[in-house]
Length: 120
Image (cartoon, rainbow, N blue to C red; front, side, top):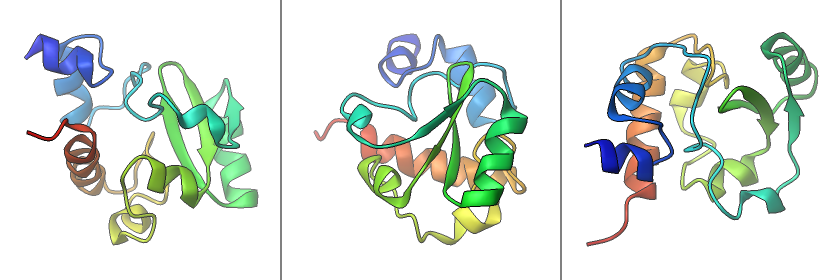
């Protein structure tokens, strides 16, 4: 399980378990910003409050990457293999870091892991 967790961008299975279980840690790992995603235009922030304010003013999706925060557009979400029109995005308030509905974020995590997993 530790190997799978690291391959998905978590530091350990415990780290993955805490995140997938709905905890809001200080380190989100790298799952939400996979290789090839740097081609997308994103707004990066060091503080959650700044990222939340920018997202509220300009729209988009607030994600966590390790100890940082980024605001992305729908094309980035599609790049992750997720549907930006999925109702669970509305349920979490388009805020992955501090979701209004942690169960909706858990479902999105499940879809993201399915989209990320190698075929076979």
